[in-house]
Image 1 (cartoon, rainbow, N blue to C red):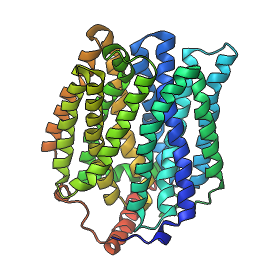
Image 2: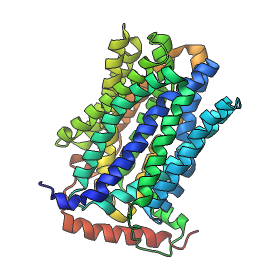
Image 3: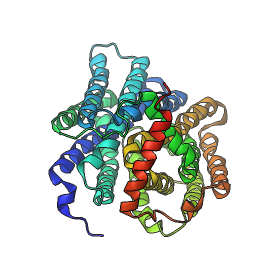
Image 4: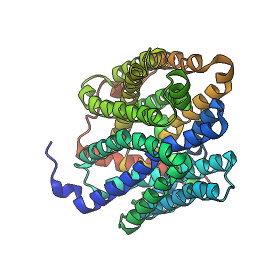
Amino acid sequence: MTVDRQALRPTGFRVFLIARAAVWIAGGVSAVALPLLVFEHTGDPALVAALTAVEALPYLAVGLIAGALGDRYPPGRLAALCCLVCALAGGSIPLSAALGLLSIGHVFAVAIVVNTALVFFDAATFAALPALVSTEALPHAFSTSTGVYSVIRMAIPGAGGVLAALITPTYALLADTVMMLCAAALFARMAIPTPTRATPDASVLADIGAGLRFIARTPIVRALTALGVGNAIAEGIVMGLLVVTVVEVHRGGTGGAVGLAYSMLAAGGLAGSVLLPRLTALPVRAVAVGGLLSAAVAVAGWVWAATLWAGLAALAVYQCAAMVVILNGVSVRAQRTPGQLQSRVNTTARMLAWGGQPLGALGAGAVVGAWGIRATVCLAIPILVATAIAGALVPMGPAAAGRDPIPDERRRAVDEAAVTRTAGEGSGRC
């Protein structure tokens, strides 16, 4: 299908993409700097894993509320406010260090504040993109955004690792603060309309209930969300011990090699995003199961590789497979979700799936001292295999055999009916 350039509304979409890129750059720097900061100050792998868990917990705590609010308030203003909060919180770390007041507790508190703000930021962007581009241009817009994100995630962590080595992880976070302030300024200038709601007088709890009911009543969305939990638990284990695996298992130092590992993760993610469209002719179930099993094999390669470079190659394969599983679930969910429920359903489903990440990271942190790094990371393998077996058996309904056979005209009618039904059933519950 040829996409009309005018349908992309270039000015708004380009500004949106530039602002998002600034947030992604900030995230790439902090993804390297924060774990390194904790490890250099404590030398404790369990605390590094705990940081990963803490960074994922806000989705569990406020994901439902953020999804509901994302369908209520102007996305541009909400995104700008979230970026400003992130900039102020992140900037407090180098400021405290300069004053001699920095503590590990402060670092963890900042991680909680920043990642809580980013949950609301995600909810805002889920609502923003459909308001900026036409329905026909959405796949192209998502593809463009994913490509920009993947390139940034390949380049920035490596640069962040070098920056951390040059000026310390603490002061590398100044780059994070600057980029977040730039993003806040861009989002604040964007006039993105507030999403139209089917039941304007419904309470926040009623809106939350509408999203939950849709997930619970749609077999394929429900099943893929459950598989996402298993995938996320394994990811929590791998990511929670990523820095210490590079430093202690592969003897990769503490700066550039860690950044390179994050860049390889981004390269694998880019490969997965390129690969998935070529797998859409396959059944949804087959893609999910195949991705999970491939990820399990790659985890073994990551921890048992004889050299750092071989391990990094396996790490890229792992992320490619994991990304296929993630994007398979996300794309099917987007195809099956009514437009006016996008923020609630996507944020809620991501919250449920990402809930597995802190479980994996906390579990890894709890046993790594007794089991060692290699054995602990290998816990991800049986989890991925068990999730794949569940994916082969769990009911997904007839939609698992295809992608989206509903024409656009019929989809709009289905969307309106679904929104009215789910909102109406919960409008009286507070």
